[in-house]
Image 1 (cartoon, one colour):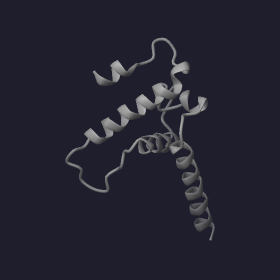
Image 2 (image 1 turned 180 degrees about the vertical axis):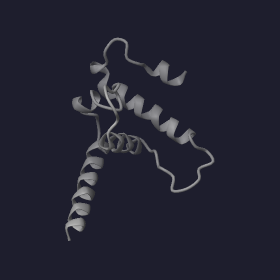
Image 3 (image 1 turned 45 degrees about the vertical axis):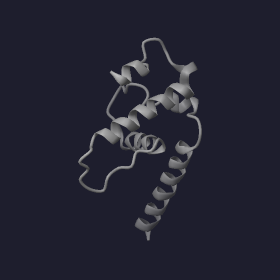
Amino acid sequence: MNGTFKTLVCTALLALTTSAFAAGKLTPQQCEDYPFTPLKGSVTHAQLMNELSELESVGYQPSNGEDADYPAPLERAEQRLHLKYEADCVSAVQPGMSTQADVTQ
């Protein structure tokens, strides 16, 4: 029962997080967090799940098997996510941060 409860709690948290990230604009907290800013340490599992949720919110669908087109779909999703970042966080962009020109090069 304890394992089932943990699974249900994790699933519920993941669903809430995914729906929060998929909805509308990025929050100021999201604008200043991974994957939009460089990390000062190791990437955590939670950060990876956050990045995957962000990529899925712009149309990325992780493959369940071999994908002959990989990494093109991932790269397109990263570009769309960067555009979303620029649109939602333009006032938060600091000098020296990347721009759309950096993404397309």
